[in-house]
Structure formats: structure tokens, C-alpha cells
Image (tube, rainbow over the protein chains, first blue to last red):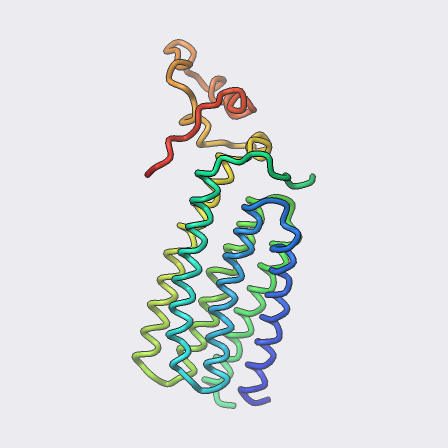
Length: 96
Length: 144
């Protein structure tokens, strides 16, 4: 198999993994679960950017991957600070 | 395929499999803290393997160094965001706090008026870890 086939297989695996993360984002019973899912989705976006840059031979897309990594970190920190300061305790907890 | 391409294919496949396992752990694990444990594997090992493969793929030295800097950035920021989320969960979810077997932050949660010099011992710490913190509304002083 050529290199393009391997990159395609990896992209398919990452797409399936991204959909599994969106399942947690949808069913997550409270905000911290959704924050964890959002963090992982941002990381998946970085990986998919890197793979698309390899697939299309465009190394300029790796700059977009760097920006996406920083923005994902900032978003997760903002979400964590919001949860910490908001002091809402009436959300639905995890089941046993 | 040359040897370099085999190495790149192995790196990106291993990274994608790590991220798939991390995503499965996020869906399957029972509570928030263990889900963060599963997410930590995807956000460090998986993405760094993929980015290392991307750095090897373009035979450009500057681009490879940039990917190394991005890996260092991810390794620095992932524990920070996970720690902030864990502290938010700890302050806001007393049910989960009671399930912890070992609670290191419970000592700092204690109110200063409850501190009796004669009673500070191991049993005091164990009591506070087993749910006395829910009766005590004193919270961690949040850093500003």
C-alpha cells in the first residue's frame, strides 16, 4: 500500500473516534463531562488537520493545527473556570 | 515504500489507535474523573505520535522543529486544563467527592474554627475524607 492509503485509513479511524466523542458530548449528564468531550474533540481537530496536511501535501495547514491546539486549550480553561465559579450543584449526576 | 514511510505509517496508525481507545474510554467509563484519565491518553500520546509522523513526512527541518514545539505545547497544556477541570468537579460535586478513597484536598477544606490542637490526628483526616466535608460548606479558596 502506498502512503496515501495509510493516511486514508488513519483518517477513517480518527473520524470514527470523533463520532464516539460526540456521543459523550450529546449524552453527557452534566457540564464537566461535556467539557472533557470538548477537550478531546479539539485534540481530534488538531490530528485531522495534520493528516489532511499530509494527504494534500500542504504544510501550511500545520499552522492551522497549531492555532487549533491553542484555541482548544483556551476553551477548555474557560469552561473549567465557568464551572468552578458558577457553583451550580443541581445538575444531573452520573449513574452508578 | 521506503523505511521512512513505514515509520510514518506506524506512527500515525499508533496515534490514531490511541485516540480511538481514549474516545472509547470517554464513553464507557463510569464517572468524570476516570473519563478524564481516558482523555489524557488521547491528548498526549495519540496526538504526539500523529504530529511526529507529520513532522517526518514533510522533509523540512524547520517544520519538524515546529511540530516538536507543538508537541511540547500540548504536553504542557493538557495537564493544566485537566487539573482545572478536576478542581471544578471537586468543588461542585459532593457526591463524587464522597466516593473518593483518598482525598488529599479534604485537609485544606477544613474550617479553621474546627481545628483543635488536641484532635489533629489521622482519624480527623479520615473523618473529613468520608463525607464530613459535605456538612462543612467551607470551600477551597479559589485562586484569582
